[in-house]
Amino acid sequence: MSRLIAIAAVAALAASPTLAQTMDHSMHGMSMPADPPKAAPKPAAAPASPPAPDNMPGMDMSQGMGGDHAGHAMVTAGEDEAPIPHLTPPPAPTDHAADTFYDPARMAAARAVLREEHGGARYSMVMSNLAEYQARRGGGGYRWEGAAFWGGDINRFVLKSEGEGSFKGGVDAAEVQGLYSRAIGPYFDLQAGVRQDFAPKNRTYLTIGTEGLMPYWFDVSAAAFLSTKGEVLGRVEGTYDLRLTQRLVLQPRAELNFAAQDTAETRTGSGLSNAELGLRLRYEIRREFAPYIGVSFDRRFGRTADYARAAGKDVRSTAFVVGLRAWF
Image (cartoon, rainbow, N blue to C red; front, side):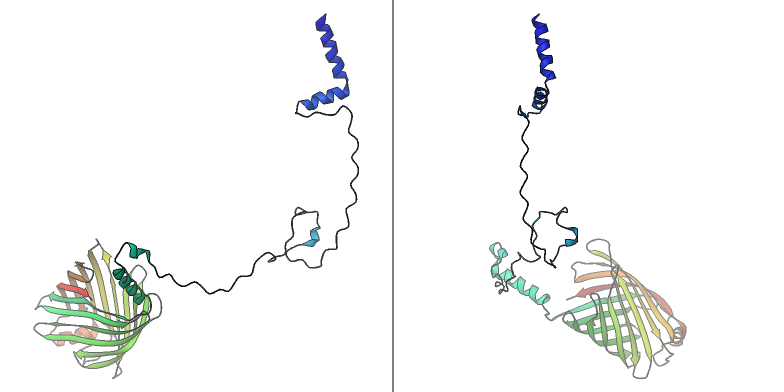
């Protein structure tokens, strides 16, 4: 009987709309008043906004004020930026952290060297690329090639010399060049000056050429020579250092000489007159001191070969070489 009374009470409560709404919202943690809420008063009319200016930088007024950016603060560009002051920069620091751990005098000397090397200072170097003995058929010979320069990073004075000979026949070729060198890029210099030959004949040439470092670390040079007698010569050289270890370096080398005409006095024929191909293996005891061994192939062509035969010289030769590469 009591169970029937309880079921009837629950049914009566569910039939009441107001109580059912209260129970439904109580499931979400919300309590509803027993009586329906009164209608909220209408808000007062908003005051008329002032007319928008004709030109507001950075805003497109064609979209109105009800777009996505309605209610955002409107700030004119540069309105909140403070002017940049024009002040004197602070003095350069005179203390050096390295002086705390190393001898200050030695660190000052190192900084002085750094300023000289990268501050337009003048410096010099003397380098012997080839200074070698050549063991070949018919008697031993020798060959040299070197250069020296003095100047800065852009402008330099360069002195070059090269030549060859045999112990029996004396000097076959010898020359000296004095050149003004100017950097025309990070890796190439333009050079111009005078070349003086002492053997096989005395000749003076006007010289113009270039030398530098090509991609993949090829050292190349090319030059043209115009003698006081109107003779035109050309030369192209190239080397490549293949580093086998930190101290062992294999260097292929090529030199080609050209002439625009036949000159019996200097025993030079037109076209490709001679070519030298070499392969030298050096061991760098120090970077500036490296003995080497290798092999050199020399060949004369065309009329130059004819002049060599007439003088009793070989047209081609192969030599085993021992020499020293050094610079200071």
